[in-house]
Length: 378
Image 1: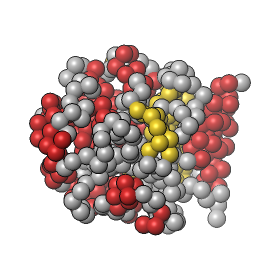
Image 2: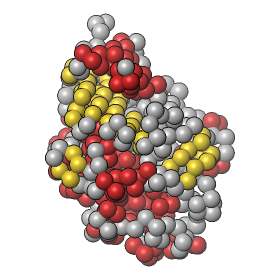
Image 3: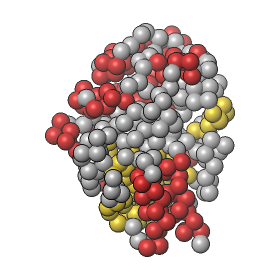
Image 4: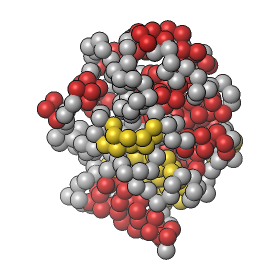
């Protein structure tokens, strides 16, 4: 079989990144992927290549997009940060100020900041759900409003893998009268001309790459504790569902976003560059740096790892050591990743269709990023 074709642009200075990207494809670690880096608000590297399907019949082209799972959370967080920057949302306020029914079952003191930092104690649903229930916004949110937290809110972090998007999204809806996907599209994606969607319209379906599930998906026996099991099995996740119109069209703001590395990197220029991207100011500098405020840190029993959370983003620590302290990150099940380095005013994004078992990023993306870091440090 011929070697996968690599397209896009990469200055000679960063050819190590291109080599790392090409190596992932050549040795079969990737089937199709894209990578983008920005420096000082300008796109420095924009690569794509391989195939959009497991059968290798559709090339991955410049405008191929794919479901990025939890990298979507960063878009949800950015939307909330924007509203807070405008004075419409107070992270220290109780959720019930905006969503009165949420106060039920002892949740009256849960703050919006708890939602943003995976510490609200609502990482899953008590009632058994099926995947189709994720497409029913009213059901998903009303069940969360009615149930009791699984632990004392703020006591420790526990990954709200799917629920975080509904929780923050309902607060956004109560404030704006619009769905989170609509606010994101109208206020962020469209002004920046960014090809990222939370709720994908059917006219884009032909551009979507097929996610290829991990060869060894997590099995029930892999969950070492009840919190992890309850979070990840109700409903059980099936990557093949992302190929359906129902999944793509639904707003699932913690896991259902569709885009490419270019759109992910260029949107987060906002945070790397003090609130300005493509000549448009959408946040203030202070509003961007709000994301760096540590909300909680410690062992997360659902991720099974140590974490440090700011407002909506992971912060450098034992889970992911990074060169600069003022860096935000998150990634998606299977391997997608976004890094936002405020000190270097840089962003790095990677998305792919061949999934690994990893929850948040993996070595494929970090190999590319490290090649750029090596050059910047030279």
